[in-house]
Image (cartoon, rainbow, N blue to C red; front, side):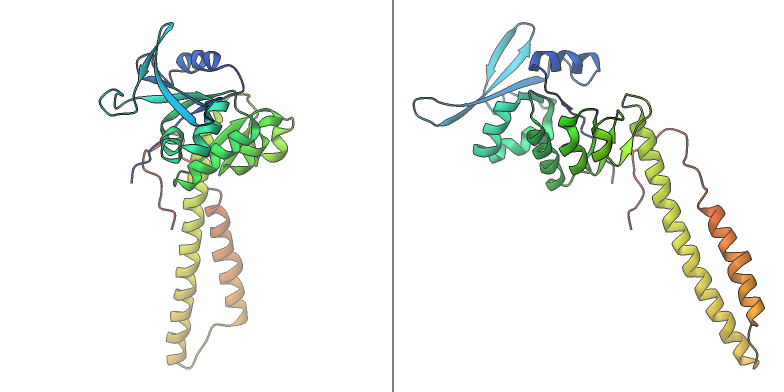
Length: 248
């Protein structure tokens, strides 16, 4: 199956700052951004949420319906709204996680909650971060990439030498190569064992067998050397394919 890729910007900055950065990075356009606001009414203590379409300096109120919200929309929200949605509106929370592109004013715990929710929905999550407030999310993600040598590198299994996200395609490329190489070596060793087993059976028919020196030669020089060079196979340096390799 082809992969459905979601890209999100999770920041501790103000939502307008995060929206500006996302627009410069071509992650969103000005026409399909829905700002999701949620709050708890001070008088009735009941939770409420509202959708606002972002356009220039004006916010247009929308209803959560297919007639008013376009098909290519993306959500933007802040940390307080994220908590209210998570605690009181589970259906909207799932849509927020899958269609959310900008998450502003997020605390370390909220970042981790977002990563875990995407994992529960069946996504493989990669996280890039460079600060101590990203440690929880980096540790929870399937592939955490630290963009600095500070605190984040301790919690993250991968650390990039360049402080940007250009390392992500390289990590995916190397991971796919490692997966294919592991499966290839396993198939080769299984085929080798079956071949040697059949060879011994054939020799038994002639009241013969391999000598200890022949076994040693096969294991050390034929099999081990080939498997070693098999493991040195480099990743494909071209464009990443949309279809990932089989994981079994």
